[in-house]
Structures are given as structure tokens and as C-alpha cells.
Image (cartoon, rainbow, N blue to C red):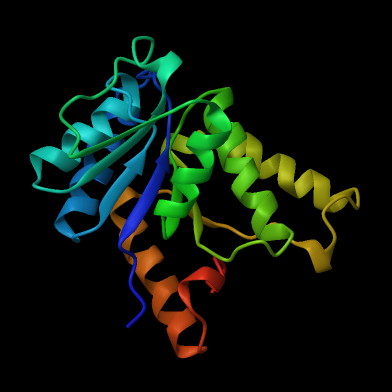
Length: 200
């Protein structure tokens, strides 16, 4: 049976100005742990990163943190994670996060979060993988990005044959069910996890 075992969460190392961001990170961490899904993330102990990781741990889940050595102090590495992978650079961090995850979720964040999310969307667009990518549009945070994607389509820079494929959830409670549905649909279609279609 195709199953989501680990989810990579991209999110900010700051808490943001709206309390709903931290609340959503905590809710997502708890939902992952309760579903028996491990967290793969950037290894930090601050902001939304720290909130989602602590929530997973408090709910009895498994946390894998992947962090470059130069960020150990800046992002206050989470020593309590069951597994910590310290790497040399950002490229290695992102590669290992990709390899360890069966799906990706983007919570609110800054430029780094945006870069990680867009990289995964680009790889899906180019057919390099089919793992589900879900944008958690907490409090409408990602609406400007979604509007930009629509603008790109309108102006002919996202063509039908190279569609950007992703899931969008406005409610954290919907995240795990949406990812699981994507896995189930892929299994019915006879696909393995490496070729999951995020839009199924």
C-alpha cells in the first residue's frame, strides 16, 4: 500500500506577526504525529520551524532535522530531534530533505521558504518527481503567490503542457487527508511514490 511516511515542511525561522501562523504550525505537527507521519525539516528551534518540530515531539512523533553547520547557532539547532543531520551547505540540505520526504508542505515563511517551495514546484513541472506539494494557505498568506501563478498562466509563461502542479489547503486539518488521498489515488493508478501526481 502506498503511504506517506515522512513529510518535509518548509516554513519560517521567525514566528510572523499573526498568532495564527504559530497556531497552524503546532496544529500541523500534532496532525502529522497523530497520523504516524514523520517530520523532515530544516532542523531549527526558532519560529514556525521550532513550533512544528516541538509539536511533533510532544505528540510522540519522529523528527528529522537537516541543517548546515553554519546555521547551527543562527537557527538554534533543535537538539531534541531524534535524528539530526549536519551538512556542509544548503544544496546538500535540500537534497537530503527531498530524499527523506514522500511529500512537501509549505507553511508561511520568508525568502528561504519561498525558494524551497518553488524549487519543488519546478521539479514537478519538469517531470523530475511527482511527490505531492501542498501549499498551506494559512490566513491567506500565499494568496499573492497563487495570484502570481495565475498571472504567469495568463501571460503565457506557464503553458498547459508544463503546468505547475500543487495542492492548496486553507485549513491545517485538511493537510494530512489531502496528502493521503494523493497517495491512494496514485496507488489506484498503478504509480509508485516517486511518481505521485500532486493534483490527483
